[in-house]
Amino acid sequence: MAGVAKLARARRAGQPSPMNRWRIVGLIVLALLAASLLAWWLRPAPPPAPPPQPAAREVFHSSKPLRIEVAASRPPAETVWLDYELRQLLIRGRMRVAAIGDVSDTFTLRVALDADAKGATLALVAPDGVVEREEKLQLPSEQRLAVIGALAQRLPQFLGAQAGASNWAALLGTDNASAYDAYLADALELLGPGGMGITSAGSPHSARIVERLETLVRQQPRFTRARAALAIAYLSLGGQDQSSLAQLAKTGAERALAADDEIAEAHAALGLVNMRRGDWTAAREQFDRARTLDANSAAALEGSGCLLVDAGQYAAARPLLEHALELQSRNVGARACLAYLDAGASKVGAKDDKPPAPVARVQALAAILAGDVETARRVLRVSSNDEDFREWAEPLLQAAADRARIPDALQSITRAASDGRIDATTEILCGAALRRAEFVFNRMARLQRERESVPLRVLWMPQTAFLRRHARFEQIVGTAGLPAFWQEYGPPDACQADPKTYGCKARPLGKNTPQKN
Image (cartoon, rainbow, N blue to C red; front, side, top):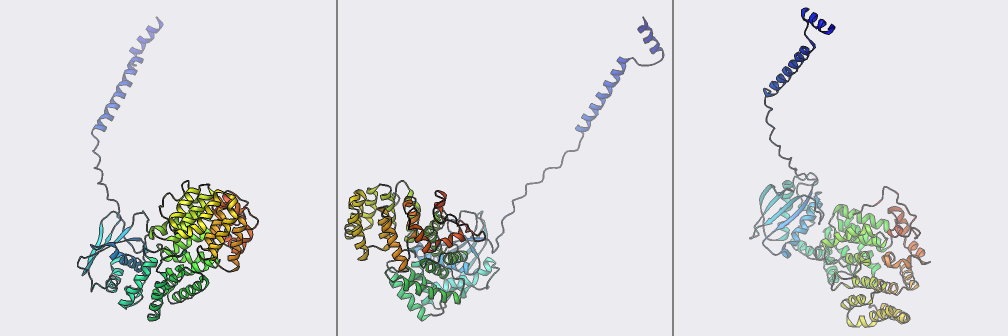
């Protein structure tokens, strides 16, 4: 009764009941929601999205690397000289030339020769295939010097070269068309795609190349490029008088560099001379300088790679040697050095039906040490003539199968070396194949006394750990001067598996730590 009386009094006083208050609150909330919905409905439409902007296109600059592409209706053999000379021209003009085999997107300089040889079309092609600029160039004649001379005059402006002269014709080295043709013929055989390398006996025509280049240098003493090629030619010769040939190469390369310090081949020649004399650090510096000037210098790549194989740094050597073989598929020296790196393969020599003799002998060594005498027989049989096989290879293989025959085999191998049938490297490889460490180190010590090149690369194969554990290993390696190189560039790879190997305590000095490639 009291509640009813209180409600009656509230109504008489004009106050809303609690139920009415909740109704009022609900109405206010609904009004606010309706206002919000109306405001959302009446909001202005957003402005349309701006159209997508095209990606900024890369702009060519003389500091960017360039690929070179020569297009012609003629057979490739007739235009290989132009590809080679265009690369040299751009390098000497301080342009960047992309390394052969580099898969990154780069600009391309395309030179398309007309079918009638009276003109060429120059095109600068962007990485996306768009032709950035193009122009027609008249050629004065079909002479090679005239063709490359016309290109040398126009390319600096066409490419917007920022460094060097506005006319690159002087970089060709001569204005004598006959001298230029003579130089090209020999330079391409030594340094072009068909070259056979400089760290192993190369072209069978090397002696004639030397004679022709000597004649050319006498007739054109200011043709510095010819002098540098002659230094390389001396080093490609085989034979016994390697010390005299190395001195001739050194003198020629130094004279070339005195006239022009930016000839990569001259630096590569000095690198190989230093390498053969055991001055490893000086050799590495010259090879690095050559590669800085020309990333596609096959001579410098081969020399650098083989030097690292001799120093036991197989991992760093591989990309250099593979790059050299991309440039010169017939490079015997690079293939022979790479064979040491591949010696641990499960099927030795399976990729090569008829390897060159220096390669076959490394493959045979690896096969014999792996207990696979039949593979060794196959690779030696296809790479040797009948007389050589009978005189030393057959006794080696018989001793590998029957160790009681090892003394007779070593006598046959020594006799073959004395008769000039095999070189000192092959003699040492045979001794290593038969696991005769004393025989190996005796031959190496003799070469060191005679100041001849020592095939130290045999010491670092996975299968020749028995040589690294021998008491005379430290003496041979120390006399060779490798510890100073390791101190500069880091220890051999063998240290990863056996840290107690002599030389593993060497640490690079930091600033001189080598790049991987």
